[in-house]
Amino acid sequence: MKHLIGTGMLSLIFLIPGYTQEVTGVPFEATNNRTYVTVKIGNLTIPYILLDTGFGSDGLMLFKEAYRDSLELDHVTAAQIGGAGSGEDARALVFDSVSFSLGNAVFLNQRMIILRGNSGFFANGLLGYSIFGHYVTAFDYDRNTMTLYAPDQFEINEPDWSVIPLYFKDNQIPWVDAAASIDQEDPVSLSMYIDFAAGDEIVLLEKPDMKFTLPAETEQVLIGKGLSGDVYGKTGIVSKLILGPYELSRIKASFTDAEVRSRQDNADGILGNTSLRRFNLIFDYFNRKLYLQPNSHFSDPSD
Image (cartoon, rainbow, N blue to C red):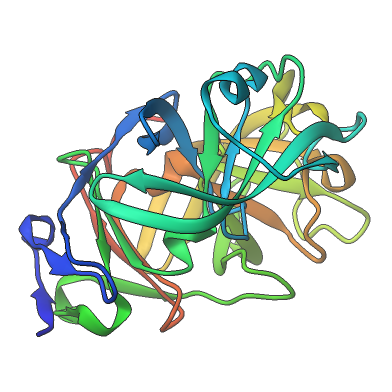
């Protein structure tokens, strides 16, 4: 049986093929302009797991080495994990065939990465493709509830939603086409990938062939921290971001060196969580669609 999704989407349940339990909406916490869930590994409950579309493979990453002492884990491999930042790659321990649960959903035979040393991250870890790559994933930011739908159990009343095509390049990270006007000029089309773990509204990447000019006024800041160290850049106000039929006016954008912030070739920018949380969202990787519906945060001013 397929569930038909309209404006009251997140009160539904479904059965995951191969599992016996029902999966209902999973609560999340939206704070620091990011989205966090709680996972359970055996008897250990770990809150503040950051949802990250940029984590394009199955598995779970934990940022605190101390968790290893609380888990019975075998078959460890040492590794180095790279990401945003201009420093060295992070040292890590990698474990295979780990199981964890998220709400009533159970994820079996997953790879788990535990960073070594002090990561300096606020979150306790991150989770990505295990969710987005296997389920149609819906977020209701009015209720702080996420629902996972088996792809063959998902159907939607599309007139209730705006649809933006998703596309993928050489990995499992989702991209969209958007447009931006820096200072009231005609909007320019931008190819942007979605970084759901980023607290920015948008990041525009500085490189020799960039399609935009910087705002007249910017401020030098620490943009954030990646797996390979700190990321510095500038912030400024962008007059308009166009995402499908929607326009977001006077939003705060980050500008930074593409080689430091991004490991994705030919990206003009990055679409972050602070823009996306203005909508109730449905990520449908299987049909290459992102569904948007403005929520109560749509008109919130930029931070």
